[in-house]
Amino acid sequence: MMKPMPRVSIALCSHNGGRFIGEQLKSIQEQSFKPDEIIICDDNSSDNTLEVIKQFSEVLPIKLHQNIPALGTVKNFEYAISICSGDFIFLCDQDDYWLPNKIEKLVNYLETHPTHDVVFSNAAI
Image 1 (cartoon, rainbow, N blue to C red):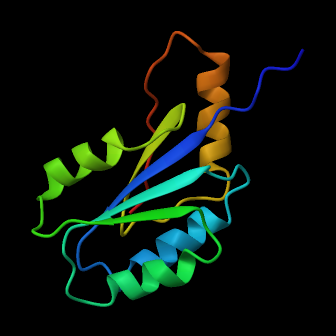
Image 2 (cartoon, rainbow, N blue to C red; image 1 turned 90 degrees about the vertical axis):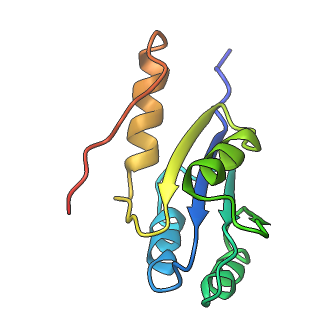
């Protein structure tokens, strides 16, 4: 019997990231291994961040939470992680851009190395 595919959550925190978040959400949309949920916790943005998120919510499994008042970076990520339901949780900044096989590679690694609890991918700036 085949093992079921792990559920993947993305915890994405935003605050006035309208200039960047669309590119990040597009890179998530293009992943070879699709996430089951994208928890976005917005920290009381006053720019167009929410409008961009709502556009992508038509094609991605986004669950948007708005923090009013803002929680701050650390508390916002703590909250986002606490409401994720996946077997694996990917942390995501609003101004990231993921290569198309990021989720697939990291999930495969964790699945084949069950004694590891955390994996980190390198970054290019």
